[in-house]
Length: 473
Image (cartoon, rainbow, N blue to C red):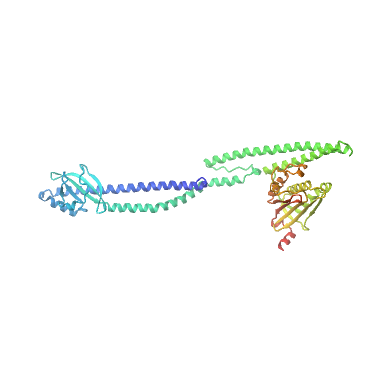
């Protein structure tokens, strides 16, 4: 029951309540009808008694023929065979033959007032009235019977009609209950769709407040108050991040400029130059880490929205490779890139893709030994562009490849312990890829290198003419 939706539970509850109501109505109506038919039958029997008394009063002059008068009454009266007169001691007065009076099962009864009881005669139900009366100065006990077969038939027809109508009514109740629950929960569906559209990037939006002053209105007001508090908290967090980044960046820039200036003033043989080099490296590392942390904070809150525009991926790859070309050359690493002759256009955020390729290339330079090789390839495929970053570095195991994109994860390798890092770069790279609906994957073999691939989907308007010709062929 708890696994069902609210709409289904409301429909089931409505059906259950309707079923109980129909069952109660059926039993009560059947009982009332039975009672009414019994009252009508008892009144009919009582009227027969009144007709008997009236018949005997009209024939008072013929006192010697009471038995004949009773026979005439039983003959002309409906169900006259269910008619007896007995003395107070129970002896039979009319009819004279005991065989004609064997229908009565309980002749001994105190009937000072009219008493009705039920019994069966020849397999059919009958109702019998017993009443003590004065007949021509003699106390007698009158028994009048009447068949209940017609009443039982009416009750049977009514019961069968109820049994036939109840399932139909239950089906109609279930359908109506579902429609009512759907109509009742329609405002909740509207609020759900409106709430789904609200995210961190558009916290200024609010749920529409219904005009009816009901529970739905109270719920909407509570949610809007919660969104107010959430928007204020996110705004404070964003402002705090901006202020901290500005202050830290200023301090790091001052330290880096001072250290570089001191390096320019000291000769290469100065023993303090090594310490200054370390300060410069640490400042650059701290600056990179600050950019990384700010990018992660923005990726979590979606403050930085993806701005898509048409860019040339070939130029993007070349520009990213030239940025680290000097660093690779200083470390004795061969850097090469391969791009198609025709430009490959895509709808993407150029700055974010620069950041993504920069992370992959920085890692490749960091973990590729001297005389190693890094190669960046851009290729077109039907509906997508593939950017592959290959290196001949230390590589990774399958276990490391499965966790390399997790935040703050750093493989426990002796080769990597000497390299500074925060474990956030590839997590940011994955977020940037997901923001572009792209797929970022890795293949690696320990001691033989790694291959990172970015599969960026292309819209039909984003595919270059050369790529279209290649797809068509």
